[in-house]
Length: 88
Image (cartoon, rainbow, N blue to C red; front, top):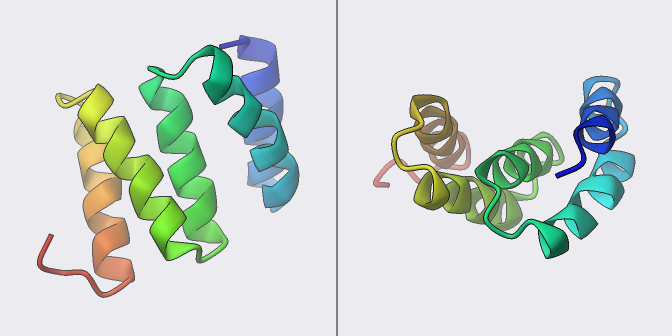
């Protein structure tokens, strides 16, 4: 993934411009579909937008692509809990 573009998306996220961040990140998946960091960031942004299904999908994909990543597992678990899916 283009690091500068990714960083621009993160900056949008940090100031609450979630749609702008998504508009940058989603197309990046087409060229880098195995990038766990992209999936993780997309999952976080969707959780901030309270898009439960999208958030969980992206966070779980990040965990599948990078199963040893503790932060990815924690974020996926916290998101399940936040949306009331405590059995996951």
